[in-house]
Image (tube, rainbow, N blue to C red; front, side):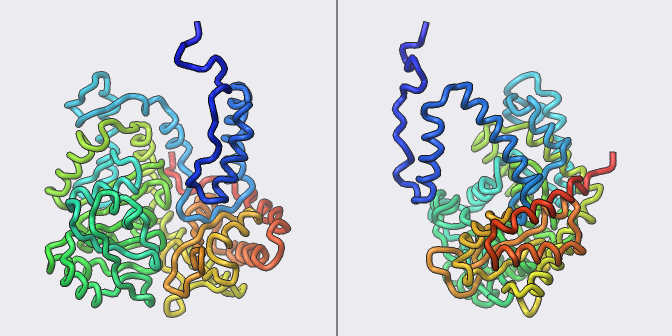
Length: 452
């Protein structure tokens, strides 16, 4: 007997169309997809879902060269753990003191994963139950601040993340946000001006690290400023986690940061998740209580197992993995300069990390540039730079190497890849797409996996 609470035909429900607050491009895309879904049968929708999953894999593993440093490919063993049935088993509480029963195996996974994370990041305390890097930042704000406290954050001109801004976790939590003064020559904060600002506004927290990092940030100096005003320091390593894990970037905890936040699926090449690390026992206790019973009563144990497998790779071959990302970024940036592309440089050096930026004004902005490159099967995204604004868009294009090196691209391939980028930006991009796909299909074996 049909439920009286459900329409007899699922298609009888009133579909309101695209959400009225969406920007025009998003509204048009949502409307197109709703039109295709509204009158489809359940079987048709199921077939489309299967096809979309396969299509996504084709886009990223066969057709396109992924230059977006915010994404990566997992170890297949980690993928299998993520797809296992672990994630549907609630695991509330600490190992040995769980609310639910039958979690002995999951307890073992939790403890092993945490121990591996402690080794990789050389931190006595880690929190793995965090759902994402954005939530890791929220936990850090909650552990160090109360609503109304002042937080000094990196601005978008040096790629400060939205979670540190009024529209993100910091603003939603209710802290007062003050943007740090910047030093364009370092693509970081201006330490002298930061000290003056901190003395004036008396922050409870100073954050550093962003969605693009070209040189190491002055963490020791920031910690000294924080100590002078009684503040904490949070380093957002969402993009740098793999470089820190592989000793290709200074460890912020060892330089004085109180908290290290990250997502685990970018340069770290793990599952979609977050992580917090600290050397401060009092902060670790607060973060633990925020995680449970506070914000993550349950969590996905499958992603914890996937992260543990990822961390085994970093302990086995992580130094080589991180060095490869950095070397590839330097080579690709140099090759782009040779092609005449306006790579953003600091005293003649494009980057010492795994990512760099191209100034985007010539192409109408970073996102406009990224959309153009998408037609050439090159995947990128916009970013903020301390140069002249591009009205209505970001003024830089971010280029990264994590997925390149994961699939075996090495510096000797940089001139060829830079040539494809330059052609896509100079000519009709769709005419370059087939050549990009041919380049991509030469690299089919994942690298930097722990020898079995």
